[in-house]
Image (tube, rainbow, N blue to C red; front, side):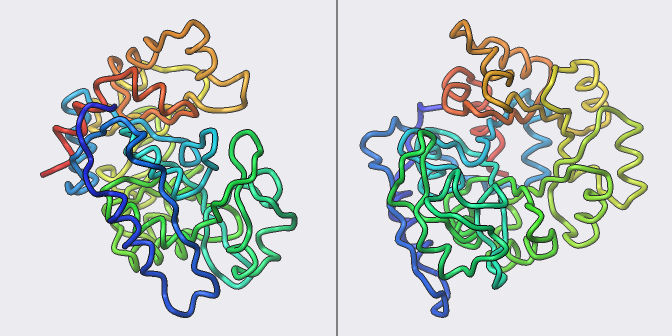
Amino acid sequence: MSRLLVAGLSALLLAACSEAPATDPVDTPIVIADPGSAPPAMSTALTAPLPDFFNCLRENNGVVVAAHRGGPAIGFPENAIETMQYGFERGIRVFEIDVAESRDGVLFLHHDDQFGRTVDATGYNSDTDWATIAGYRLKDIDGEVTSFHPPKLTDALIWARNTGAIVELDRKKTTSFANIWAAVVAAGAEGNAILISYSDEEAAEIARVAPGAMMTASAFGGRDIERLESLGVDRSRVIAWTGTREPDPAAYARLLKEGVEPAFGTLGRKGERLDDQYWADDDGSEYQRLVDDGVVLIATDEPYKVAEWLTADDEGWTSCATP
């Protein structure tokens, strides 16, 4: 995904992330990877409504590559705006990120219940005030401490809105779908956000508290879609999550027949995930097979390699990102 040019995005990001309210206890500067070191990426920003965008991908055998936890790399931590910008400059357009809540009610990006693995600090998210969290430094995938800090969800949403990227929001247990969606609406990022559900009950809750939100929900065919609809879920706003274990082409075919886009994950525990199996021979043809079978969203821990291998992501985005 490195064939077309993105111009001026670094300046736009710096301007967007300076919009934090004056009452913020800490203003964290955003440091962007040197764009001169990045290959040129796609120039088209997402302006199509999300349901229309995914319908277009489904109808045209396109795909998006979703970077798990924001696409961490050497020097770039998970769940950081700087990391998403780094990926964006390399053609990634969808970023799965985790949303936690501080003791004083600030939503920020972090995966674990406790600090330590990805943050140079200790303690629990829910026991720590935002003013303290904002001063912590993030670690990269090698455990090296960087100059980057945990970002507010609001700043990540503003970044997505202004660049035209898509963020998949994974709710952690310290917060709620209602709080997350309120932040999405306040940032004007409804057209750039997808909420992740892990059960029918969560999908129903999203439909109730976030009307109009695009979501992922577990589904493998018509009966699953009908069950979701009986809970108030709009099928036109569902991306059907089909797991991470083994591809299921028959399920993809059933979902496509229902007009619903299939998603599949090759991510997981290192050494066991399909990403590691697929790249063991340095051949990414398995990802192309997923696309050929109808998968419209591939969630991966190897987004840079997958995006470089595929062409359906470039072509799909170019064809479908604008109305």
